Length: 220
Image (cartoon, rainbow, N blue to C red; front, side, top):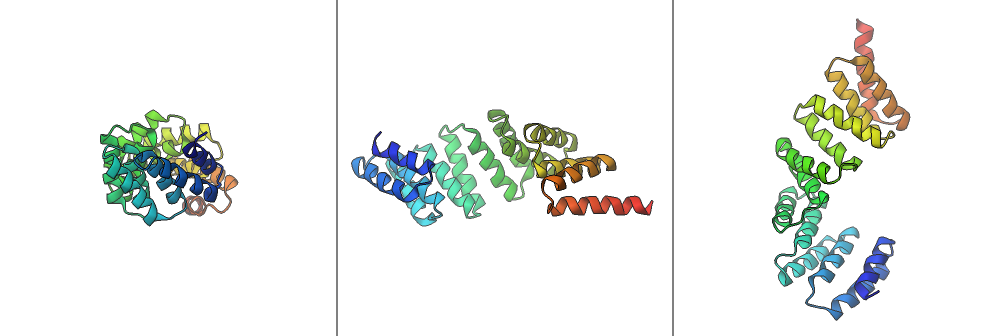
């Protein structure tokens, strides 16, 4: 196992300080290889050292202007700092350079969501679900985007799929309840609000939703 492989292994084990030493050694061995800089940038990003992470990603791009994963890393860096427009630009650049993984489509979709462009987010989130059809987090974000663009039945089906993967997904139960509420199916809505509260007793949105329905029913 060379220095780079050792560093990545240590990083996965959460041994960040040890990983730093091996990443440093890997870069000293191959100073013109962008891979070492990209992975060191990933480590620094994980440690919330944004300024240094940015410098390492930039160095990788300086060495290889077609290093798609460096642009992806920059996208993640800016996303973490809520710089969504800059994140969007770098995710798009990574995709143009051939990065086709589900995560880049998911993150690009999320940048559009955070900028209030729900409809623009949809095709990227859809593609992310196609690449990772059993990933509950990706499916949930796609369901939210569908709901936010008033595609209620489609959103409902996605939230049901999330729950089929993970019955304990309280937010999926809550949002499924909301879709039923929008269809005037109060009993089904309350059922899923209750399930959300069983899983997460302090789920304020579910509490508020259930209380609002019960108040309306008591008035009738």
